[in-house]
Image (cartoon, rainbow, N blue to C red; front, side, top):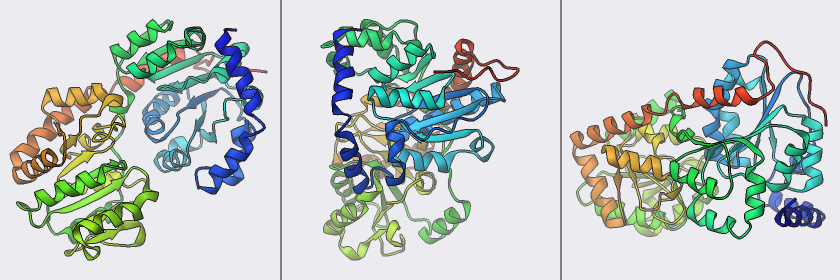
Length: 438
């Protein structure tokens, strides 16, 4: 064990007595489910019979990106059961909403245990997975060490390593090399990610693309779509999706400027965290007046007098992408790294994003290069782009056609990944292996 490994082992052990109090504080703020706190300590195992593959994704985007891979894995191994862990309540909720009925009976969800050595051991004792798949940048030293001790093969998919993260890991080169060596295979989003991981000591690294590009179109309630479309009556609609603090003010500025040429414009703001709905509505009221603002979570409707509608509900972005004539993708005007820009592409909605797309740079760059998206810098350029797209049907059609071609390029990635992963896992195509012991 490296010095860094020893430090993380003892740090996890030393902090363990304090973590239950921290979890209860999070539960009080709605960030944990009180009756499921034991799962964060590795308890609550109900292992199904047969082969079991564990997949871990931290939050919403990572969890939803797993769905096509999960489908491909189960299609190739009919006896396979999946354990999916997440780190947030929102991810768990959306995963349950999006899981197709034919998959739901073979998938179990739990919240991931914190990276405390004995909690990792308890989790693995209870579930005894035959393999583990981690998503993006989930590099947990104590859990990966416990997997390695048991000989449970682990794979890292959709891996990314930003320049900033790589610089931080260089302060603990032994620990980085130790953790990365525990993965049998690592599949990165880009060649740049692969190069940074290799420089930190990773082996068996391949760059096959971004799973988020292969995601299925976001769903929507057809009846609600028809109702809202009739209510809007042909008004131009500008959607700001998955916005972060600091972006809504810029969006409202842009909407005000765009309204000069589009007086009937409706702006829909869908904050990344729906619990910010009241805050966003208050900000909008300060700009356009309280009477011109509605909140979906409060039962408000985007009727004729509404200029700003706050879509502060969970799991309805697919509905609003279908209603919008143009969509700005949040976390990109502030330095948060951006969100998946292909979600609107799969629904025929023209795409805008800001300068900060580090987390999805390959997708954003591909869209820009293909003429499938517009990058904006501030409120003025956002207003200009919104006006251009909503006023020029040919411009909108050109953007959506190009974006659809970029989105189609990744459609085979989940199947390729599933085939490669199953080659190294002890899961036979003809039936379940013996359950792995501790």
